[in-house]
Image (tube, rainbow, N blue to C red):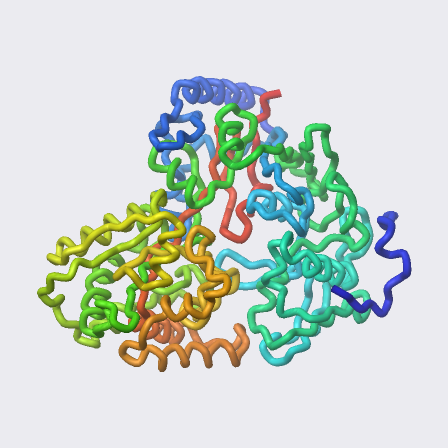
Length: 583
């Protein structure tokens, strides 16, 4: 991508720029305590029973339960002050050991695909904006930005005086060059898809960035979270020490591709975390083997591995709502059994009435709409689609010989669990059904051809708190890679998934469309009105959002304290941990 820079120098992209206590008695007691806990951990190997056996993991305390009974989304850590894992000593701690995967481009902040690598880079680099846990935006390197919902040109001003770790100021040219680099690597960079509306970028001066868009984009700021690097460092070798602006800086690479990070601006607090060592493993499973062998201290578990570990271990977890959402699709296509509105409403009411009784599920947070209840848009108001469905006065399920067919991908433990739960709801109501697990290819074909009544599907939530993403947009880029891959059948996928309009569904879709397409996120309606609008849309939609799946940070016995992870920044708050040194 070509960028325009009114103040650029000819050789700017060619060369890097040059920059200008606890008492001993307490320590002994802690040491003895941890030796005893470590001995207990050696006797607490976890046995896995999955077909593909997971690496065995030990924990210092086999009685220590997960730090959140359900999730940290609904409660703070009410751990007793006597909990040894929260008593942070005032003496210096050791080096925190993390991991990242061995993959092409993993060492480049703008090309790293894995979430573990991206989490590591979030400690070193900042974006123009940061997405907070409640999906509100916080300025990072940016200071102000014009409303991207109003025009196809956006003017963004950077904060003045912010410098990289090597002392050079962060400029608009750096940000512009990073955007151009991302868009020039659409297949390699995970940030490219979010920036595709940008057609031109100009560094007007050192602190003013002008973005040209193909069309107004109200959620653009949620895509400007990529790491900002100095322009001169974009094309350096994979083992380059790239300056950032984050809490930690790159210190050195070892021969085995282990990266040492050090606190960029250490304070006078002797107990602060000052060193992080990042080791390379083939994948997450290999990293978990390293965790069990005391090679690393902390692991970010995605939804799949969290589900496998948590029920079988007593390890220390910090749980949070992740990015993957499971929903139940009703086949309401023409000539389908559920194309009858009374049948559809009766079944939807039956399933929803039981499934949403609790806020939390074994897999994560139950969700009546495709937004976490933590989102700032709802302002604490709870959508209530059941009340809306009740206003339709749904009829009782008719006596029929039809056997409902529920399809799901085989080898998917999460959807297998939910299939059993949906089946139990149907059986309790006297409804005949059959569970039909399918290969990934057959599942895709069944959804596209409409040869099902119910389908358990999974989608990846967008970063922006777009209240209408599932109801207004096609599902091509939202679905998990194991589900539908529309390619040339994009329109067909949307048609099959959306189905017919029940009870003026399109009217409420249009309300959502008008609400967010023509207005800025900062000008959206109040949370109560938005919850009401989403309740009406969700009640009429041919699917039920079921669960936003949990993810977690897994700690070993060397860690004291808890961090504050979320799906945007799994390593948030990691600097507040204290690590018991074995040296």
